[in-house]
Length: 172
Image 1: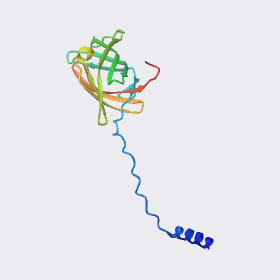
Image 2 (image 1 turned 135 degrees about the vertical axis):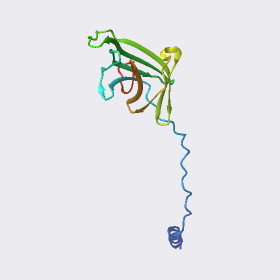
Image 3 (image 1 turned 90 degrees about the vertical axis):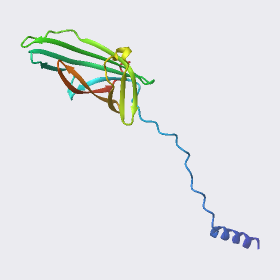
Image 4 (image 1 turned 120 degrees about the horizontal axis):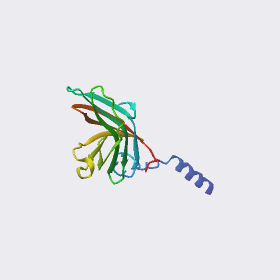
């Protein structure tokens, strides 16, 4: 009899319907932060698709030649949303037909803040720290690369250029 009762319990349990468990609700995920470039140094590799240094030469209507040579840009991205940009360049004037001298490289350092706005990386120069007269620059970043288009003036000619900067962990 005891065996029949146990068999009957096992059989009843096998056919009994177990109530369905409520669907699992995943825990609420924290709000997603916008991706940001790594706090690191980024070094210019190319300007308008050409390896650096890149030279731009123009002549005005009076025959004066202007030469700008872009040599290097090192961009330091800091975790506190500040940046430091150090540009090395050469800017020379010469009358038409004259040879350009080997003027020394000039240096310009600009400090400011950066922010991610949507998919863009926006640089705001600080006018009190080397950014006087400079405009906000907006670029993009992906992985170890930052691309920044900018405008510059060579004599009376305005040009648009784009610099590609690659993360370099050997520069501090």
